[in-house]
Length: 458
Image (cartoon, rainbow, N blue to C red; front, side, top):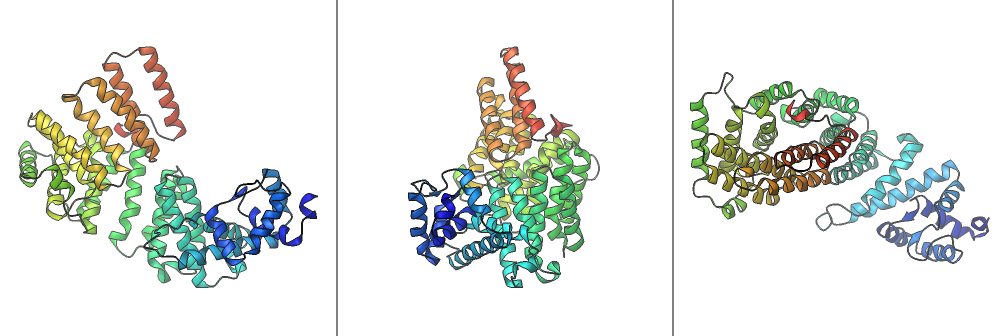
């Protein structure tokens, strides 16, 4: 009743606010005020009536917000969502991309446009092809940002809407945008456990990609899905076939000790004279083919320990050689770790191996992406540092990086870190009832995340 007694302008302003949910973020509010300064006065009236809280634009109760939203007809809801989203998109497009690579109202704009899209087919929105491309691009940006925040479920939602806005014949008319949307949707579906949807997007990429290089992103997701389900041998076969296509050849038959020795000597020669500071300031790699080759080799290293252990030093040393010659990436640190492990286990040089492992850890935070850091640190503390450092300190580190892996959305290595932590605690003689309790907690976390216990080493 109080809502309906308000002046018409105040009701209209509240209806617009209700389209955002319980509250309107400050950045979005500023955009709306710039287009209609009377909104603020109308909202102030509602604030005095106790409909909104005193600070900001937040409804006093979610039932008040819902009642306000329900005052609109379906047609009015659609029109408001589309109008608000369009205003925000215009504001984003007019802003400097250099100052704000990701605009703070991007999520709000995408949410409003997508709500309108959920109420109508694209044709019913009355947007032309240029606007469709703009909305598809908007959702791609929102999906990319969601992936960076490890919000994979929302990333899937944004990318699905982005694909729905693509005009007819998208692969012919908007190839790069289509490839980006489908590739990221494929990855987001894998990360959120929606494997059937992942396969659908992967099939679309395989059917329409113009070149092998444009298929690699989708193929890499396929490899990750195989390893996550314990099919390590099959995934590594697929990975080596891609490396072959990229021009990186490895022995098809059994690797000999002489081959390993040659690889280690080559890596040692490549690193000769380099300090940690030299490597931090080294040029970055720009060659897309080599970037993918290093990414695939770095990914393969932990799994090769189980299916083809003699290939581990070969791939690690190849990463080192290519990085020193062509520029470094985050994957370079995994090559350094593999080289360090080989120094300890093959050449029995524990001090040198430990030193290069520490350098790898100090480099990974500089090279990024941030998702790689917990993974590398878990592997370092599990496979290398215990040769010199107290087992108790390596156990503490494994627990810390288990949590860091979880924070960046790396459920697989978060799971692995917890497994290594529990095993290390058994070795150092921790209380068995305490270990049993911790292991049970970690196992429940893995099940809820859809991770098979020990699947990485199956």
